[in-house]
Amino acid sequence: MNGQNLFPRTLVGGVSLPRLLVGTNWFLGWSHTSLAKDNFINEYQTRERIVSVLNVFSEYGIDTVMGPLSQHLDDSIREAEQRTGQRILRIYTPAFDLGSDPAPGNSAPDVFDQCAALGATFCMPHQSVTDALLDRRTGEIRDLDKYTRMIRERGMIPGLSTHMPESVVYADKMGADVETYIQIYNSAGFLMQVEADWVMRVIQEAKKPVMTIKPLAAGRILPVVGLAFVWNTIRDQDMVTVGTTTPDEAREVIEISLDLLNRRIPDNQLQETRSKKSLK
Image (cartoon, rainbow, N blue to C red; front, side, top):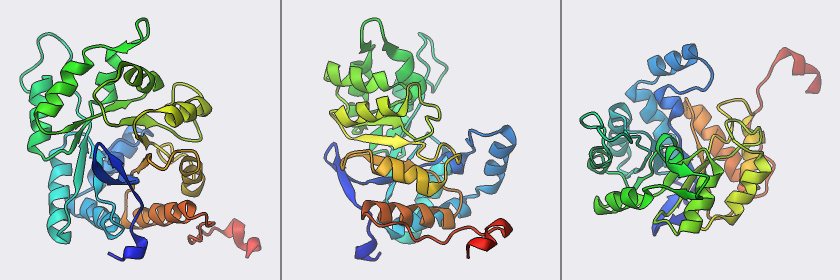
C-alpha cells in the first residue's frame, strides 16, 4: 500500500474504519433493477472475481466489508485476506424471524451466533428487522435492548440498519446501546422514505457515526455526481458504502472519492461515445 493513497479513516465504537466501505449487492445479486440483472450478477461473480475487487480496495487501506450472512461472501473475504495478508473487517447485517416460533437456525440467538462465528466486528440487524420493530406511535424501537445485549454478549459491536430515518432519531432519544447506523442516502432519493434534505438533517444530528448506503442509487446516478453529493453533505465521522462489480469500477469510485475529499475536481478518464467527438 502507498501511504499517500490510504483512504481517510474514522472511529466507530472504538474501532478504526475507512470512511469508504465495501458494499456487496453487486457481489451477491441484488441489482435493484431486474431479475435478469440479479441473475447476471450471480452468474458472473465467482469467488475469484470478488477477490479481485476486494484486492483493489485493500490497496487503499479500505479493509471493511458490509453485507448479509453469506458463505460465498465469507469464502471470498477469507481468500482475499490470504492473498493480501491483510485482515478484512466484517459488518454483518443479518435478518431473523421475529415470530414466537422461528424456524431452526433462524432465531436471533442462532443468527447472532453465526455472525460471531464468521468473525463479525459489527452486527447490525437488517432493516427488515429494525423497521419492523419501530413504533411511530410510541416513538421507540421495541425490544431493541434485548437484541443489542445478545450482540454484545457474543463479542460484537451493535448497530442498526434501517431504511426509516425515524430509526436513527428514536434510537438516539432512547439512548440505545448502538454505536452506528446504516442509512440510505443519495441525491436521487432512491428507496428513501422522505426527501434527501430531511435525511441530510437526520445524519447531521445523529449522535453516532452514520454508514450511508446506495450513494449511486444502484447505478442510476453517475459516480462523480452521486459521490460528490454524499461526500459534501456528511460529517467527517460518517461513511459511504459503495458496491462495485469489477476492479476497474472499484478503483474509479475510490479515486473519485479521494479527489472529492481533497477538494479536487476528479480527473478520471471519461467514457467515450461517437456523440462526444465534437467535444474533443
